[in-house]
Image (cartoon, rainbow, N blue to C red):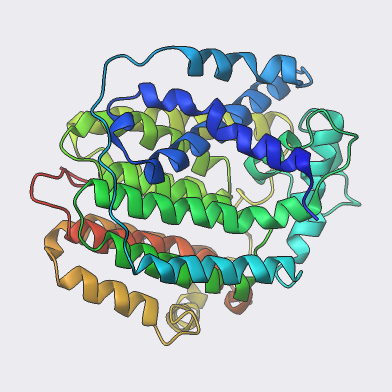
Length: 416
């Protein structure tokens, strides 16, 4: 079962990311929102340090990784903040708790481990943890199936949990990180939503938890990068959607989360591009794009220099002549084997609010679906194998469309 080192080093991440309390009015958030923010900040900080050290040719160690986040966390906040008001219990969250418990039990039963976790996500993490660097020569070995240009955040997280150990990766810890990431994301939706005065925050948190727990079980993503991707996407969208009335003060949290998205999966870069395109329509928010753009550019440059080109290069068999049959298959896959129920549930909540506020999110969701369609337009798209995983991102955007539709009048929108 999961070992103490994995648990302790994972629990250290929100402590190392607690310097996020210095950004704007983060300390006004309830703990249900602050904890996910601190975890996202701590994880991104450690991963960014690992990447910089790798680029410099330096093997990481505790002596290299710990001083900066500890120093930042010890610095006092810029100013005093209001004390977060306690949040009332929400009975509907019992649905979220039950869904997460079912997910945990499924993971512990060993039913959610995919081949990808064994072949490259976990194996990369173990190798990087043993060598204390991103061993790109290992990933480029033709005898391995490593997707060398897949972003490194998840393997780096696994390598972090091996710090100071005997070189053995905790494989149980890796798969149990799936319900952890989902639980933190659900807490963020509820905490940010209630803080912002969004009355449907509880129902949306319950819908998010129950539907994504089911998706994770059906798609066997435990140990893969999808849970971490959705977690960072959720934090970014919470920061852009659920802040109160200080439009500029969400920028740091959104920027960190979006940068984390770019380092988690290839399609994360597309998510960030779409969100930034909408965000930057507001002149006061352009700074949110600096960190994620620099992060993605650095990873792409690193990959180009070291010959890590695979997934980012368009496939040769893509052709417009396959567009119509692929579109038909995409429409079928959008049902998510639930007769479109998640989309319908979110749409019902959306139209019961101010629907015009949801339009940027709806457009973002449609834009991501259009991107998926463009990369699937080939003779053998295999949508039945991968669409169930990739369609979770546009569905998440649609869930936030429902939240945005119920944002109080004083709230800023994703697009001002």
